[in-house]
Length: 389
Image (cartoon, rainbow, N blue to C red):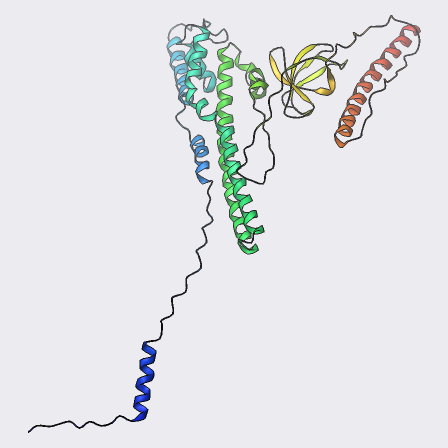
């Protein structure tokens, strides 16, 4: 049996629903909204510049440390051998202070072990210098390394300032970055401090070894400051210049180095040779009145770099002059009272710097006057005592 399906006319409601559904299918599909660009991660871009400092801090392949241990061992062995049978003491042909076979450790033992193998003092010094070649090569770039790391960190700090003022970041983000920068800077400082401590220790060891090799007795080489003073040379110390720039790509050029000039000590009490251009710095020696020196303007204004008796240091410009001062004429002894007078000086205090210079000169003058007053009074008392006898 064949079944024929009957067609029924769809209801108006069905047709309307169908048309509505079809219209939705042909509507344009909205494009997906683009996500906001991802912010660049704020990272420690200077971290690679810290690695060389860690390398120096962990430097353990120095020959001198091993040499010191070997020196102590050699001293013990030689002492044992020489003490077998009749005790034997003789001076080294290389170092007068060294008794062959003496037991010593540390830097003295190191130098002693090298001296036992050297035929001359020059050879001994060359051997020690060769032992420290690697360390000196590792430590020499430290000033540049410190500058590079510092410049990098300051650039990054300034970049946050620029980002905030330009509206690229808000205050909250700026504070977050500041905290990170402070943490990274602490790492910078620690890396530099650790490397510097290692450098100081090793250079101190090296300098003392060289002084010993030159013939200085051990008891005269115990002061690190005195050892350093013997090798100090201001001409080898580069000046550091700092200027503020807005464009971080600006090239900073150091000013030309000034030529040395001929100077004479104008202070009648002489002038002290300082280790650094600072009146509070360690005094390396004294330069007498009217002494002629060759001075180069130091990076610190008001000071000259010079040498006296083979020692390099600094003298204040206040106590030197380009003209030869008049010689001191001692008056003939005379009876009477000793009266003091003070010559007039330039009391210009028109600028803060000149006022500071004047204050310093006044302090020095007061010290000199006080000393002269004491000696004059003592001499006056002596005159009276003589008169009373």
